[in-house]
Image (cartoon, rainbow, N blue to C red; front, side, top):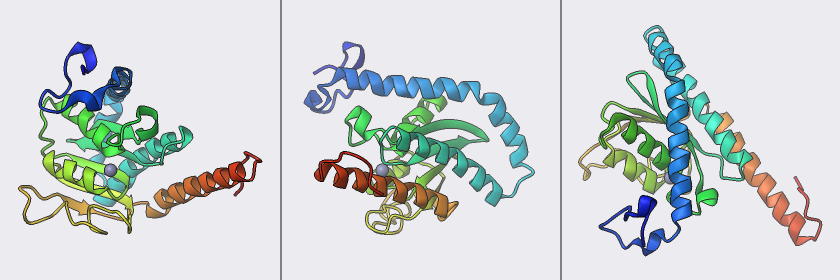
Length: 221
Ligand SMILES: [Zn+2]
């Protein structure tokens, strides 16, 4: 099966997994749209770079986590699990994405993965050396592995994921001694806001499911 532009997207893989060219196109369009918005925000980012030199790292972490929260809210509005991520390199925002698993029908379309792909395209290099990733929820095992492979310098997240967290809560992937790169990390930045978003989303989802089960079809909170 062929991917975007009639070419196999991953020649080394069994491309039957990519039998949905429209979804691939949608994924690429989402990435291009994000990249264009990132370019238009370049002036802001330069301003932030200047501001960064005057701010302490805590203020910077909160600033970029708020950008990630904007992404997470966009995910919630689209009916996706509300997780958002941004990637910053030398004061520039080079990746910005939210979870799109449902829209793209792709289990790998987590916020971090989409943002990593944008950032690699922006830098023209798969190595995101020196980059910092801000994500509203602790990365899962897949995303933590991708962050290590991408050579990300630092990962900052909001809410811990005690059940499936791939950074510290369940699997210690970001600084595992057997891997060839270790990411520095910080946790708990704007954790309450990040956690509220997740809790509200799942509460409303349970309410909808109960409403459907009872035949009313409405939201029960
Ligand atoms: Zn993930």
